[in-house]
Image (cartoon, rainbow, N blue to C red; front, side):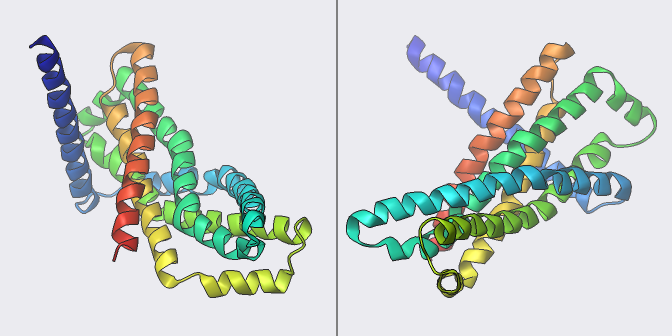
Length: 257
């Protein structure tokens, strides 16, 4: 009975956490569509999440694309199918690796930053100061960040896809002996509009998840430096797991039709 009781407590705690996050997300959405709006906070969030994330996204994508080309060539050589490198690199980057890697990089860089910033504001009572100034904390802190991430992460995914495909192209033409024009033509011919649409849609969902988790854990942090540390760690863990779970669901939705 004690084992069942412990299992029940875990399940109830999980559903309670899902409920709290869902309510937090619904409140965030409601604040996005109701004035007042804070364009300066939105612009700063766009800069921090989008522009400042480009270096890590670009480096991650180009090395992943190059490694993917090498792996596909080595695997295809076992079946005399080396020629499929352009097609598999393109579909692998656009459908899966591009969105997921960008989402995880955003979770590592942006989610942790948002959680630490908001958690520090809470433990130092800066959020209470916003309330005394008749400024809703979620409208000022959460809504601009979540909206900015939802809009800008698809652009980062698009950039990551292009750079990743270029990484595969550079390795294939420079090391593996592929013809440059034929490689580009095979890549363009193989990709479909549905592949690109799914990639951008995943980016929007992953960006929303990453920013929402950072804001949620920051707003619900414990006391002191230890609470800030726990909130930062928990936000990244939750964002990474939810991004991978959402990727599975979205892949099933887009490619089972």
